[in-house]
Length: 213
Image (cartoon, rainbow, N blue to C red):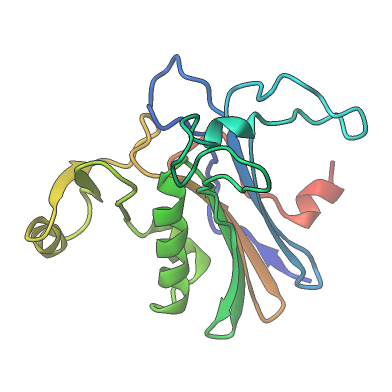
């Protein structure tokens, strides 16, 4: 089966504070095989070594997900029996316009904005994977301002500024103003893969690349 990789790029574990001293902990990968089966997997430890406990059966570090809960009782996200904590990872598997795709990202609260926009680019605007990942985005994950990629057209900036406080940001290697996505897409029997175009910490790899090693 033919395979192509539109972009060599990267995926960076994310810390919302964007501080060089803060721990990074989240990784996302998307996979499509020769039969079209897809996986979108987001894994987070929540701090650099998670709970600092390794699962004996898998060798994987366990996360410290209890920190997602509110330690104060009586609130919507308070710790309690049989409760699921607030969670912002949202890997997506979808289809549209004769294509199937699997998207996800690292980036804390920025993940939801990123994945929803990537999905919209693919379904509502019919973009291929390379276009999806190169399209400038906005981030509305919280705080007083909407973060706007400063390569977006001026009329987009003005439309957002009419309703929100906005802040321009450049898509750079560091610091990250937007989440760091990774995704795959299948059209017919052609698979493609891409990761965040401004991050050097990840890559898109084909089956042929793995077989050659």
